[in-house]
Length: 186
Ligand SMILES: [Zn+2]
Image (cartoon, rainbow, N blue to C red; front, side, top):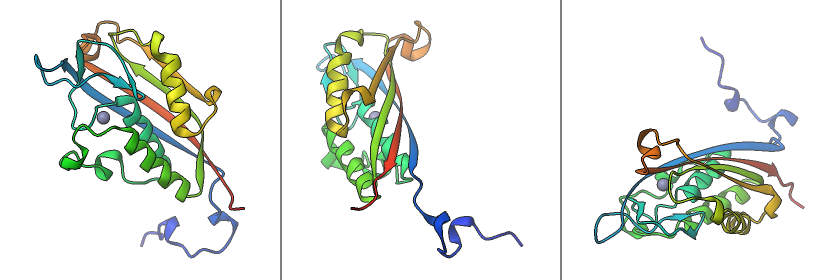
Protein backbone atom coordinates (compact mmCIF):
# COMPACT_ATOMS: atom_id res chain seq x y z
CA UNK A 1 0.00 0.00 0.00
CA UNK A 2 1.38 3.38 -0.92
CA UNK A 3 1.51 6.29 1.50
CA UNK A 4 -1.21 8.90 1.09
CA UNK A 5 -0.28 11.83 -1.14
CA UNK A 6 1.18 14.53 1.12
CA UNK A 7 -1.38 17.14 0.00
CA UNK A 8 -4.21 14.83 1.14
CA UNK A 9 -3.22 14.79 4.78
CA UNK A 10 -5.39 16.78 7.21
CA UNK A 11 -4.42 20.37 7.92
CA UNK A 12 -2.68 20.37 11.28
CA UNK A 13 0.04 22.90 11.61
CA UNK A 14 2.64 25.26 10.29
CA UNK A 15 3.71 22.88 7.49
CA UNK A 16 0.40 23.86 5.83
CA UNK A 17 1.27 27.55 5.89
CA UNK A 18 1.55 29.05 2.37
CA UNK A 19 5.16 29.14 1.20
CA UNK A 20 6.69 32.65 1.35
CA UNK A 21 7.72 32.41 -2.32
CA UNK A 22 6.49 30.57 -5.42
CA UNK A 23 8.35 30.42 -8.73
CA UNK A 24 6.72 30.06 -12.15
CA UNK A 25 8.13 29.25 -15.59
CA UNK A 26 6.50 30.30 -18.86
CA UNK A 27 7.32 29.52 -22.48
CA UNK A 28 5.72 30.47 -25.78
CA UNK A 29 6.44 30.30 -29.49
CA UNK A 30 4.57 31.77 -32.44
CA UNK A 31 5.17 31.21 -36.11
CA UNK A 32 5.95 34.46 -37.93
CA UNK A 33 4.37 34.86 -41.38
CA UNK A 34 4.07 37.76 -43.84
CA UNK A 35 1.46 40.30 -42.81
CA UNK A 36 -1.92 40.50 -44.53
CA UNK A 37 -2.75 40.67 -47.38
CA UNK A 38 0.39 38.64 -48.33
CA UNK A 39 0.02 36.19 -45.48
CA UNK A 40 -1.75 35.24 -42.25
CA UNK A 41 0.58 37.18 -39.92
CA UNK A 42 -0.87 39.65 -37.41
CA UNK A 43 1.08 42.82 -36.54
CA UNK A 44 4.09 41.91 -34.36
CA UNK A 45 3.43 42.78 -30.71
CA UNK A 46 5.75 41.88 -27.81
CA UNK A 47 4.99 42.90 -24.23
CA UNK A 48 2.08 44.95 -25.66
CA UNK A 49 4.54 47.05 -27.70
CA UNK A 50 4.12 47.11 -31.48
CA UNK A 51 7.30 46.33 -33.51
CA UNK A 52 7.54 47.37 -37.16
CA UNK A 53 8.18 44.26 -39.23
CA UNK A 54 6.98 42.66 -42.48
CA UNK A 55 6.11 39.46 -40.59
CA UNK A 56 3.99 38.80 -37.55
CA UNK A 57 2.59 36.02 -35.41
CA UNK A 58 0.02 33.53 -36.58
CA UNK A 59 -2.35 33.40 -33.64
CA UNK A 60 -5.94 33.31 -32.55
CA UNK A 61 -5.30 36.21 -30.13
CA UNK A 62 -2.97 39.13 -30.93
CA UNK A 63 -0.11 36.58 -30.69
CA UNK A 64 1.92 38.47 -28.06
CA UNK A 65 4.39 35.66 -27.22
CA UNK A 66 6.00 37.64 -24.39
CA UNK A 67 2.69 38.31 -22.61
CA UNK A 68 1.68 34.69 -23.15
CA UNK A 69 4.90 33.39 -21.57
CA UNK A 70 4.56 35.79 -18.61
CA UNK A 71 0.89 34.83 -18.18
CA UNK A 72 1.83 31.14 -18.11
CA UNK A 73 4.63 31.82 -15.61
CA UNK A 74 2.13 33.55 -13.27
CA UNK A 75 -0.41 30.74 -13.67
CA UNK A 76 2.26 28.07 -13.28
CA UNK A 77 3.53 29.53 -10.00
CA UNK A 78 0.11 29.06 -8.38
CA UNK A 79 -0.47 25.73 -10.20
CA UNK A 80 -3.52 27.14 -12.02
CA UNK A 81 -4.63 25.83 -15.44
CA UNK A 82 -2.44 27.22 -18.23
CA UNK A 83 -3.28 29.97 -20.71
CA UNK A 84 -4.52 27.53 -23.36
CA UNK A 85 -6.91 25.93 -20.87
CA UNK A 86 -8.20 29.24 -19.46
CA UNK A 87 -8.57 30.92 -22.85
CA UNK A 88 -9.15 28.22 -25.48
CA UNK A 89 -8.28 29.27 -29.04
CA UNK A 90 -11.58 27.74 -30.15
CA UNK A 91 -13.45 30.56 -28.37
CA UNK A 92 -14.40 33.24 -30.94
CA UNK A 93 -14.35 35.77 -28.08
CA UNK A 94 -10.53 35.61 -28.11
CA UNK A 95 -10.14 36.30 -31.85
CA UNK A 96 -7.46 39.02 -32.11
CA UNK A 97 -7.76 39.38 -28.32
CA UNK A 98 -5.44 41.92 -26.70
CA UNK A 99 -3.24 39.62 -24.57
CA UNK A 100 -3.17 42.13 -21.73
CA UNK A 101 -6.59 40.67 -20.86
CA UNK A 102 -4.98 37.23 -20.30
CA UNK A 103 -2.25 38.73 -18.13
CA UNK A 104 -4.78 40.70 -16.06
CA UNK A 105 -6.79 37.53 -15.40
CA UNK A 106 -3.66 35.59 -14.38
CA UNK A 107 -2.71 38.43 -12.04
CA UNK A 108 -6.21 38.42 -10.55
CA UNK A 109 -5.81 34.68 -9.77
CA UNK A 110 -2.36 35.30 -8.28
CA UNK A 111 -3.77 38.00 -5.98
CA UNK A 112 -6.73 35.79 -5.05
CA UNK A 113 -4.25 33.06 -4.06
CA UNK A 114 -2.61 35.55 -1.68
CA UNK A 115 0.49 36.34 -3.73
CA UNK A 116 1.98 39.19 -5.73
CA UNK A 117 4.83 39.26 -8.26
CA UNK A 118 8.29 40.10 -6.92
CA UNK A 119 10.27 40.10 -10.15
CA UNK A 120 10.19 38.96 -13.76
CA UNK A 121 13.04 37.80 -15.96
CA UNK A 122 12.36 36.99 -19.60
CA UNK A 123 14.34 36.09 -22.72
CA UNK A 124 12.92 36.91 -26.15
CA UNK A 125 14.51 34.97 -29.02
CA UNK A 126 13.89 36.86 -32.24
CA UNK A 127 16.08 37.01 -35.34
CA UNK A 128 14.49 40.16 -36.79
CA UNK A 129 13.72 42.96 -36.04
CA UNK A 130 16.22 43.99 -33.37
CA UNK A 131 14.65 43.99 -29.92
CA UNK A 132 17.11 46.42 -28.29
CA UNK A 133 15.46 49.70 -29.41
CA UNK A 134 12.15 48.46 -27.98
CA UNK A 135 13.43 47.04 -24.69
CA UNK A 136 12.84 50.18 -22.58
CA UNK A 137 9.22 50.49 -23.77
CA UNK A 138 8.57 46.76 -23.28
CA UNK A 139 10.08 46.86 -19.81
CA UNK A 140 7.95 49.89 -18.85
CA UNK A 141 4.81 48.23 -20.19
CA UNK A 142 5.45 44.98 -18.31
CA UNK A 143 6.30 46.81 -15.09
CA UNK A 144 3.00 48.68 -15.43
CA UNK A 145 0.99 45.56 -16.16
CA UNK A 146 2.52 43.63 -13.23
CA UNK A 147 2.48 46.57 -10.78
CA UNK A 148 6.25 46.31 -10.33
CA UNK A 149 9.01 48.92 -10.30
CA UNK A 150 11.09 48.74 -13.51
CA UNK A 151 14.24 47.42 -11.76
CA UNK A 152 12.24 44.24 -10.96
CA UNK A 153 11.52 43.60 -14.66
CA UNK A 154 14.20 42.34 -17.01
CA UNK A 155 13.90 41.62 -20.72
CA UNK A 156 16.79 40.02 -22.60
CA UNK A 157 16.90 39.84 -26.39
CA UNK A 158 18.75 37.10 -28.27
CA UNK A 159 18.92 35.83 -31.81
CA UNK A 160 18.97 32.15 -32.72
CA UNK A 161 22.21 32.56 -34.70
CA UNK A 162 20.48 31.90 -38.01
CA UNK A 163 19.78 28.30 -37.02
CA UNK A 164 16.40 26.53 -37.24
CA UNK A 165 13.01 28.18 -37.73
CA UNK A 166 13.61 30.87 -35.09
CA UNK A 167 16.99 31.71 -36.63
CA UNK A 168 15.43 31.87 -40.09
CA UNK A 169 12.98 34.50 -38.79
CA UNK A 170 10.02 32.16 -39.06
CA UNK A 171 9.17 32.12 -35.36
CA UNK A 172 9.54 34.07 -32.12
CA UNK A 173 10.23 32.26 -28.85
CA UNK A 174 10.01 33.51 -25.26
CA UNK A 175 11.08 32.10 -21.90
CA UNK A 176 9.92 33.81 -18.70
CA UNK A 177 10.40 33.25 -14.97
CA UNK A 178 8.44 35.03 -12.25
CA UNK A 179 8.84 34.94 -8.50
CA UNK A 180 5.75 35.48 -6.37
CA UNK A 181 5.79 36.59 -2.76
CA UNK A 182 3.09 35.64 -0.27
CA UNK A 183 1.21 38.69 0.95
CA UNK A 184 -0.25 38.11 4.42
CA UNK A 185 -3.76 39.47 4.90
CA UNK A 186 -3.77 42.69 6.83
ZN1 LIG B 1 1.06 32.44 -27.55
